Image (cartoon, rainbow, N blue to C red; front, side, top):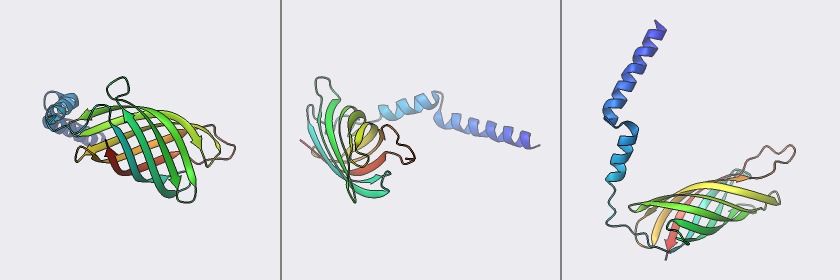
Length: 174
């Protein structure tokens, strides 16, 4: 009886999802959403420089802190960026690193991924960094952003902490 209930629940859920998403399924729903984005009021400019200031949570220390980021976009290829980021935990400098990023704009929003290398001030060793960010332009010069990054480094004996950093703040673009 339990198997029959689980199976009928699954069938009902799949039927409801297919009706909501329509004939194109998930890909069709995503295409419809992207197709409705208004590109006529795009506030992004080619070759712009962005400066971000925000708050962060540094998992390594378990504390909040400050994030400062400077990036130059459309370096050689549209959407390609070079940047540097500085992260302070509440009690000490946490890290600084340079990165290469790719940004995809959708109307007045953008998503970007980044990867780079730098120095972990807490562990006093080199690290690699990967991450993702989201941005929304409220004007040609002002954006709100959120990002998540993860430091990759050699693990020390007995060190179980991680290198996750989550932040959000305001960005100025010129």
